Image 1 (tube, rainbow, N blue to C red):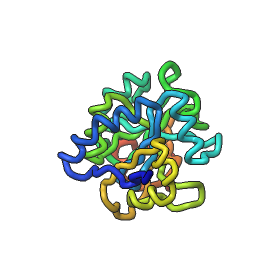
Image 2 (cartoon, rainbow, N blue to C red; image 1 turned 120 degrees about the vertical axis):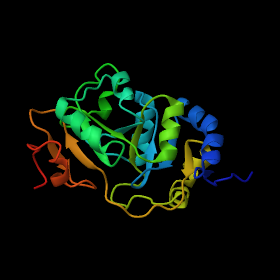
Image 3 (cartoon, rainbow, N blue to C red; image 1 turned 45 degrees about the horizontal axis):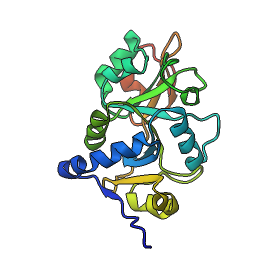
Length: 223
């Protein structure tokens, strides 16, 4: 039997709406999703432990590297038991949705330990990709996110790259690929640790530290 490996159209509003039912069922079944973001294509799952471990296996992720969470608004933070400090809230108010990842304290009752980083927090980004935002709104919860690539390989910028590299996972039904077109190369999100006394840039990215300091003057890191 020939298996259809073609990705699911995820470009127009009509395509997004048509894809939602099967995509949400796929996530709730503990399977892995590939999707476009505002930077590169990502892999993601529901945030329960078993789903996360499946993604670890597919990605061949080292144990010390967690995944971040994507949300469609700050209301989702409360459901995750995550908290924004006053300074983190100023960054979020100016740069969310967008390519800014905040590492936040909390989440012990809601988020698996595998998603907690070495700083002790949970990395979260409110995505600015409109199609992905619509999916998150319909799903009603955060999903995990990591770039769609194996260690040492450049992240995918098209759905076809993913189906070529992970065709067997697609054929098994373990991986569902949403096709949002080819993405222009862009820097990753800037990551700011918000768990300590002072906020600290732990990965430079799309938003320079000098811009972030307009909201948080005593931000540490990234010159």
